[in-house]
Image (cartoon, rainbow, N blue to C red; front, side, top):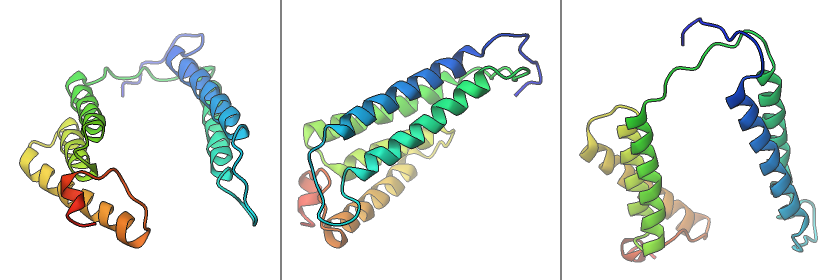
Length: 159
């Protein structure tokens, strides 16, 4: 980052992010309050959305506080190529799950594209690492936790 400071006024990106985080916290709170799932003991499944809501409120307020601080450094320009690789990985993840290709292939694409976005050039090696991690994660969820992630033809071999 450069040491060039902002002259005065609110930092617009931090202000926008703060307001969006608070709005998202409001949506999560409303959605959590509409759940009708109950628990016979202790904390039920509705507790986690409230925890997430509290976290979003804290982050939103912190962004608003930072937005009005004087002397914030100017952010560097974004690397558009890296952003396109990461967004492409997310789109690939969503497309794989929507098309029924399964969790492991989706995670393989996401991992390889994200690694490329962070500057790594070994796409085939990263795809192999992503495949291994995705398979281990899928097996842990399916066999140990008995929770099924989106299954495709590959995952059905292990079920």
